[in-house]
Every structure is written in C-alpha cells, then in structure tokens.
Length: 372
Image 1 (cartoon, helix red, strand yellow):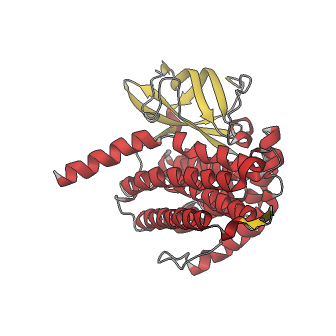
Image 2 (cartoon, rainbow, N blue to C red):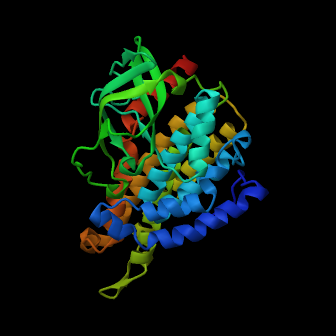
Image 3 (cartoon, rainbow, N blue to C red):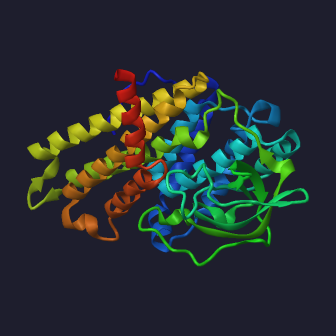
C-alpha cells in the first residue's frame, strides 16, 4: 500500500519489536478467516506474542520490562489488526489490563501480576456491565464488605479473551465509589454459553458471572499517576486503522482484476473514492501517532486526543470497508471473500466504549466550550 513518512518515529532500540511482530503477523493472517468462521480464540497466536518476549517488554523497567513506547504500542496493534483483528483486540485488552494492574496495584500485588505476565499468564478486562454502557468505569454493581475486603456477585459483559484469562482487571462500586481490583479466576467465576457477535467473532467476547468472588484489599488498585496514559485508550484507534488498511488491501486486489474486460482500477469513480478514503486513513493515522507521541511525552492531553482519534478512526474503517464492498460487488458478500469479514470487523470499534456517538458528544462539548 502507498505510504508516506511520519513525523512520529519508532525508537531505534525498539524497531526490532516491530520487525518481530511483522513476521508473526504474516503467519497470523493465514488463520484469520478460519478463526472467524469457527469463532475460535487464536490462543496459539497470543502465546506466540508472549513467547517472543513482547508482552513482558511493555512492563515498566522496575518490573523487569523495557517500558516500550506508546509509539511502538500503536504500530504493533496496527500491524496485528491489518492481519488478524481479533488477535490485535485480545492482545491489546490483555496487555492493557496487565499494565494497569502493575501500574496501580499495591507493590506486592503489582510485583505478583508482573511476574505472572512474564510467565505467560493471560489477562482480561472485566469492566462492562448490563447497565454500564459507555460509563463502564463507573460500576453499577455494589461490592459486599468481607473480613479482608469485599466480594462481588454480578455479571460483566463483552470480556474479550476471557475464557483463556488467568487474571482480570475488574471494577465494582465500593462504598458508593468506583473501585478497581486485580482478581484471579477461580471457581467463583463462570462463563454462560457464549452469545456470538456478528463481527470480531474470534475475540470470543462474552459474559462472565461472579458468585461471591473475592475482591481483596491487598489487590485494590489506586488511582493512576496523573501522567499515566491507559494503553487500551491509546491503542484503540490503531485497531480500526489496521482494519482500514486491510480494506484498502482487499480493495486494490479486487480493483486490479479484470471483470468482463474492464479493470475497475481504471474507472474514474474507483480512483476518486479510493483517493479520498486513503487520505482519510492517512489523516487518522497521523492523529493516532500524535496521541502516542503525547502519551510518550506524559502529556495529559493524550487522553482527550485518544478520544478524538478513536472517533475518527472508527468511522474511517467503516468507510474503507464500505468502499471495498462496493468495488468487490456481489463476490464480496461470499464467505470466501475477506471483504465480508472486514466489513463486519470494521463495525466493532465504533461500538466499543467510548462509542462513536458518545465520543462525538464529549469532543463536541470540549470544542464548543473552548470556543465559547
């Protein structure tokens, strides 16, 4: 695909991680279609990323990691999403949950979770609730006080990769306020039959039921540092950007095939609409890279920028997928076509919190307040 140089560069000593992920992603792409059809969690790919040392490398240096940059995080997610969006999504949720626990849990618990990540254990986020919607950080489920903390009986929704998780980053309402905890999966945690999604089927996003699950004070997380940028928030847009690039790849492949003596790539409308989508993807990519740059600079503007970027990238992915579908025609609806999967996958980002409508409300209010 056509590319342009970016002002945001991967640190030279981290480039080898990009090379490693690029090589692995080529292999991951080979199973993307089958994993989607079977709604199968690509656990072997996730383990390959862990075995490469990538997961541990994102840990802070004091916990044995390399404190890899947000610039590298974004490109890792983009490369994975272009090849296998479900791998990118589950991996980002996994590394984001682990990093949040190591960063905000009490020292002993933080060291434990860091050791677990280095040992290849899996992490998931258990935050969304039936009544939560976009307000997933403000739990509506009350924790019950116990001798050494609290317990939770309730449900969490849309937990990607949860059936392979060893530990969860979980929230509950404690004394009327949000509380966040590290929780290890045990026999108080169960998984009802999965209600499969239309797109991103291989993430195995599903419900978890908790029955008196212990939330110990020793694993209660504190507020993050003021300069901390959540890895998932920064990385979200790059999932949609990778999907948008996959859509452009599929579009180009289809457009260069002769149909009835006509090559669609020569048609004026195809060239014009491809140009606009490519420019939109490039613009969204620059915004995403700016967000990563702000996060690496520990600038508090990183989080607002991430909301703006996710909002745009989600819509750009849908536009790129829709154009690929138009160019592909009826054949793009067939199961054997990658375009039908890309179209479904492209919807996912806009639905994930913060959803596009909710993000628009936040961003629009900020713009109007600043200009008022």
